[in-house]
Image (cartoon, rainbow, N blue to C red; front, side, top):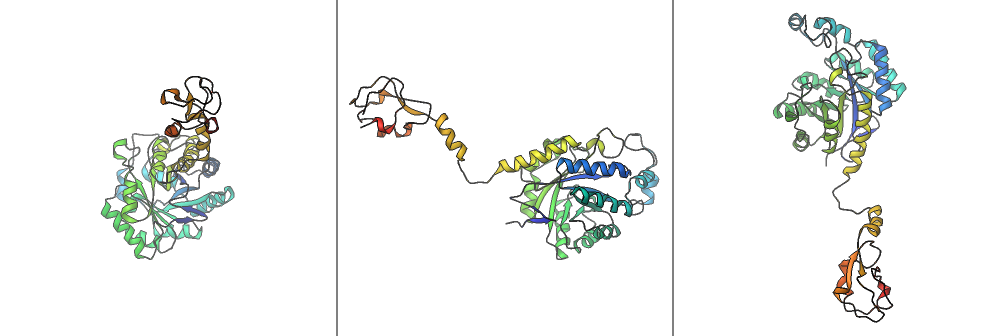
Length: 351
């Protein structure tokens, strides 16, 4: 039995409704007014958490990468050189504090993906309920160790990673005495073709590593994350924006507030509908039998004392009389009172 994870006061795992993370990432575009509006919209939609990305212009990208990316043809997603965008879209330590405070005010969990040890330590001062590791860092073992030592839940996205690389990442976290691990199946294409999504990987990861699993989604719309919930995802991470037409890196592949509300509400409904493996008939269905099932009926008027033959009987709605499955106990018995054509037979109609 896989142990549940506890993210603050929310249980994660089999038997619990899926945990929905609205991935703001850099969709705040460096604007704290927009950032607060995104937090508000995610909270209003019913998400459990909003997630940011904690990096700076010096902690993530090397100088040669900046030098290679000074101009882009897609001006909607890229307003200038990579360095300018990274500087504009990064959250300063003070902005982290501001965002976390607004999350507390709105009673939605604040979390983030750190990209260096310093950013892990910054998030620790904000008492994040868990750490999210980006797909790109499945192989960054020193970062994984530093995160694991905080002894908080570690949620790892697995995009681009082989099974062996995932195994090594899980072993690294466990090697620091931290068993609070969840894996998110992920395809690091924005958006991916349906044929490479492979949602059944979630079951494989659950069985292979004995951990709770979820899905980090880069598809368009709500169908695939809802399908992931139907296949047992305990966590759904979905990029989130106020407007998919907004300029910036990830707005176009993000859920808008209406879509996030659908994921939250229908995700709960799907989880509830999954139920369990035991075959049960609900009280509502038991009651429905009275209307939908059949009863034995007289195919002709039958006088009192008549010995019933098979040819005297039919089976019609409603199911309030003798069931057709009991016909062998009716044939050969005498009628206790005159019966009308099409009358539903009850046991007290028989001698």
